[in-house]
Image (cartoon, rainbow over all chains, first blue to last red; front, side, top):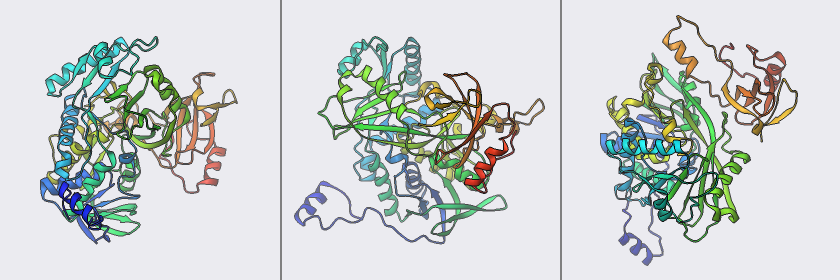
Length: 414
Length: 109
């Protein structure tokens, strides 16, 4: 597979772009692989990539029901940050953020990582205290964040109304190396490298069952035939409970819809990501000029990938108070994804009751930022049976009461 | 918008009038329960891609809790019933069976 470079662009320019190759193969399924990953989203593909790159396991298939990166990877608001409260979270999210810094070079694929800075507004006294605490915790964890004043907020993002009557901005938690990346490119970049390493990405291949023998996984049945495997990784976000039921165990997960929307494109007006967790809204501006807006999740279980109108109203109402200039913007598109929520709002990267099956889920409303770190840690867990990055995120933490409680630190919006 | 009928008030309520309370018919184990039983009660959820039994509260109405049977993909509602029920009434079960023969749920409690 040819390298992407400025010379390749120039070469192709001279021959009418006839020399570009397919970014990944679409092979027929083999009968058996050493490792099968279910779910070709960011997390699944990153897992496969680091299995090959870090652990030399290349007889791998990544199975996808729909199309590559068509689930939450293609539906999120692309925010990357690592300003979490607990040490295990900071470790995996900061690993992830650090990997994003060089991901384009690593994958030879421009993921458009833009460390433009992420600002989490404190709009109540409670939030001020909370974020000051997070800033201190981050300092100890080696995550670069600081608590900034309302004046600095206004300087960094002039379109914020900091003296609003209902939700005045009292300060913010600022992570200067947080930002955004192009979500599709992350999935495509990983897929291209996986394919280059000889891994099979099987799209339109739905898993219909998991076969086990004596408490050990032997393979999966799919709409494209039976596929045997030595180890199985389930990385399917909102559908984790569905897959776990096939494998015969239950999960502490509930699936709800989370939605996002974008406006018509406008001239550049904000060059940071702003999150307002008190009012459940967050916003950034894409390179195309669209304002990318996210809000709260539905309060009840569903798999509709749709979202509901009153949540849009809540989100937009809140954001208009914080950003009065967007009040006349037209919204272009709205969509929803199914997020997998755990009780402590932290992910699950774990072995399961079935030997040979590993599960990576529970990223809830904030999985995109974690893709490289999650893939790194989960690949290590699958290859070696243990990983320091994943150690605190085992399924047994619920039985043992060792939560990694991020529900306060993360709020609703991620 | 999701509309559920409050079984106490007998009126249809928009979801903005209601507060969702998660999965229904969870069995709470008493003193002497095993860790696994308590873990199941506290954390494990059916989370089905299909028929779901759930708790709702008529928050901006009578304020009472009630239960509902709903499909998590089609959002079809099969009926609502009082929170004191240990299992769904027969007419709700019949309505589900008519639409989704072969539906399952763990033990009701």
